[in-house]
Length: 251
Image 1 (cartoon, helix red, strand yellow):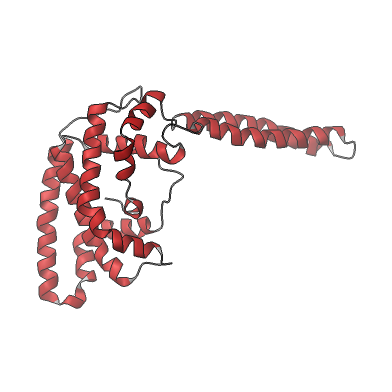
Image 2 (tube, rainbow, N blue to C red; image 1 turned 180 degrees about the horizontal axis):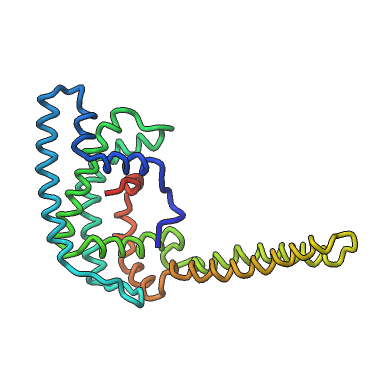
């Protein structure tokens, strides 16, 4: 279940390229104006941080996880997930929030922000790795919780609103009604060719098939009633640890 209706995007592509080339290289380029000595120290520190991060991730990922077939959240694991989110929020997000908010007002990030990006990525990864290891939670379990908790909330507020599958069916119902109306009117009009009538009727049938498929796919995104109740209980923490633009950075 992906976060499909939130604010997702452009800078993520740039960041993905930066990460794929390598954070060390990105730092060297971003800090070239500082001079070779300072850049070298920064690279050495980043390399040390990366090593510590990988060690923490190895400990975290030693905790096996299989997504539950019933899709139900367990409170004890949700609390561990929220503890990781709290660490990211308190240790990294609040530190960089002024810059993130400032960049959100601009059409394109400035050079200073881009220069800091590799450091922020490194901080995020290190903080997440430490917190996951402390909470005995693997990356896959964290990702599953993130998709269930925040992916669902983007499409349905806690405690209210239609389920995602119902919203999808509603949209397709409207489309089917319009397609059916056009086909019926065409079939009653002697001036419309048989080919056009056939095509319109096929369009109606296709719309019905697509509606069913979309409804089935969207059903997977619905928040289960038991999950809704659990998230209501922890509503304050869940909403507090959303982190705006920081969510766009892959780490």
